[in-house]
Length: 439
Image (cartoon, rainbow, N blue to C red; front, side, top):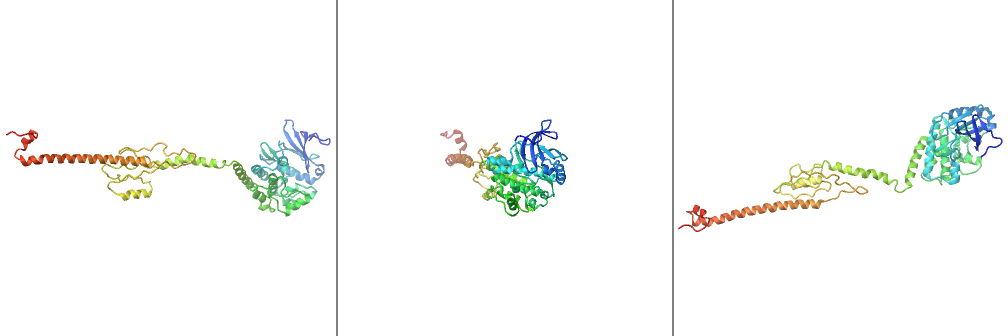
C-alpha cells in the first residue's frame, strides 16, 4: 500500500517507502536505512503514546525483546521509546503471512502444518528463554519466508507473569487466538503462547478458527467456556492440537515437547506420502548385512570328515562342534564300522577328495536377489560323489581279493596230482616245465 498523506516519510534514521499494514497498536511501514537494510517499522498510535504506564511497560518489553535470539523470529533492529510516538523496527521478512497463504490457497497439508508448527515451537523456545511471552501469536503474525516461518510483531510482547492491558482500555490480542488466562486478565506465561499456537495450527489445517466466527464477546466466551471444534483437523494433528487448547495452562505441553512431537509428525507424514518411501530405507541395511552374517557363521566351521579306506568311520574329532545337536547325536549313534556318509549341510562347503584340504569358496552362499534368500542346497552331487568313490574302492578291493584267491587256488590245483604220482621226482618235474620225463 502506498503512503498516505498523514503518514511520515522518515522515522529516526529510516526512510519509509510504503505501508505494510495496520493493527490495534499502530501502523507498520516498510523502511530502509542508509546501508539499504530493509526493516518493518511500527509506529505506535497517538492515544497509546500519551499513556505513561503503556510507555513504561513498552520500554521494559523492548529491552527484553532485544535479548531474543533465534532463527524463527524477526530480529529487533532499533527502537525509540522517548519519541513523541514510540516506534520500533524489526528485520523485514519477505513472504506472505500464514493468514494470506491459507486464505488464498486453502488449508495446508498435514505434513506442512506439522513442519511449520515445529519451527514455530522452536522459535518460541528462544522467546521464552529470554523471559518474554509474545501474547499475540496468530496467523497474520507468522510470515512464510523462503528460509522458513518467522514470528513477527513483538510490539505487545510482555515479560512472563505480566498481566494484560485491558485495564487501560486496550484490547490486546485477537479474540479467536487468545488464551483463557488472557481473557480473565490473569498473568501470562509460556503456556499462553502454546494455546495461541494450537489455535494457529488448527487454522492452518482447516482454514478457520477452532472457535468459529462471531463478535469479540462471543469469541471470548467460547475461548473460556466451550471446547474447540477440531473435527476437520487431520487425525495425525488433532490430539496434539487439543492438548495445546486445554483450558488449564498446566495441562498444555511445553514448547520443547511441542517442537519434538511436531517434528516426529512431520517426518512420519512426509514418509507416508509415497507408498515405498518408508519400506526401502529399512530393508537396505538388512540386505547389506546378510552376506556378512552368513560369512561369519561359516568361517569357523571345519571341512566335513573324509571316510578312511576299508570302510572305517570318520576320524575322531572330525565332527564340527558347532553343528546342530541332532546331527552330532546321529553321528555318534552309528558308531564304528562301515558308515554311509551323511549328506552335507547346505551351509557347509562342498567336500573335496580324500586327503585333500577343503577350502570354502569366496562369496559362497552370498544372496544376489533383492532380499535375503536361503543358500542353495546341493546335497545330491556330493552324496553321489562319495558313494561312487566307495563303490570304486570296493570293486577294486573285491577284484584284487578274487584274483589273489583264484591264483592261489590255481597254483594248489596244479601241484596236487603231481605230488601223488611223482612224489620221488618233484625237482625234475618242476625243471622240465610240465613236459614228458626222461626214461
